Amino acid sequence: MSIKRITLNAVAVVLALLFIFPLIWMLLVSLKPNGVNVYTLSDWIKWSDLTFANYAKVMKDSQILRWTWNSAVIGVITTVVSLLFSSLAAFSFSKLPFKSKGLFYLLIVSGLLIPTEAILIPLYETTLHLKLIDNIWAIILPGLTNPLGILLLKQFMDGVPKDYIEAAQIDGCRSVNLWLRICLPLTKSAMVSVGIFYFILSWNNFLWPYLSITSQENMILSAGLPTFLSNNIMSLNMIMAASSIAAIPTIVVFILLQKHIVQGVAMSGIKG
Image (cartoon, rainbow, N blue to C red; front, side, top):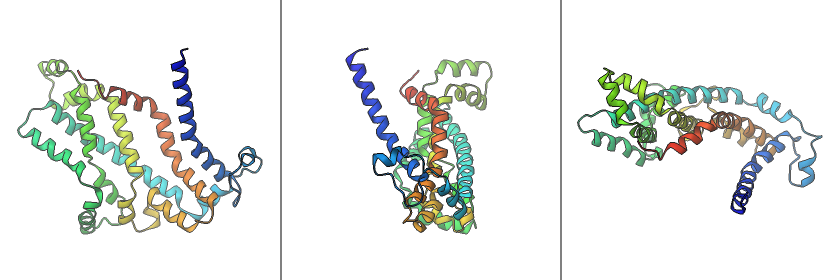
């Protein structure tokens, strides 16, 4: 093995340790008795006092499991429907000829220039008019379209060879079948990558759910967790336990789908 390869591996290991260190510290603190922190080396290697009491107390004193369930339901619905809309829009812009396609695409992509904070007031007024305040659909509906997802999927669908499309059209394949049988299978990794992006975006969404949901039982994790933490600001162990519970779903998603994430990034520059 060359010196360059050894150096790169060593740097990668150091970076990995730097990234995983806060997670390990958070987990250890969450498992320590209330009032016991992990500041010294002896605290790190002393595992005899580890306990799940903090987790039990968090689940007892808050509705964190309900918040997690709400976040998961909203995340799954938003991801599935957003992927459907985004892939259809990306297919239309990439493979279907129609008038003013460039103008419509420019209008959609220009949505990336508008910050969420700029539309909160009209969004709240619309939600209030539809009587969706304190309803999970108030969170789901505004998140069903995302210009960035359309932009990314279009770039991948531009890489689908025209020969495949033309051959399918000669065989009598219509637009819906072109999307379903040609483009979707060839952009599977991209779909998974964008789906993960949608799910994480929904999972970490804070400002709008915090404004639109008023009851504890309808809150999602990102909005309910700060409320719980503010009531336990003096207990670092409780805070770390609650944070560990909140981090578990996203970590599991990345572990299970990391192969597709890597493939999606690797394919992002491939054309034709």
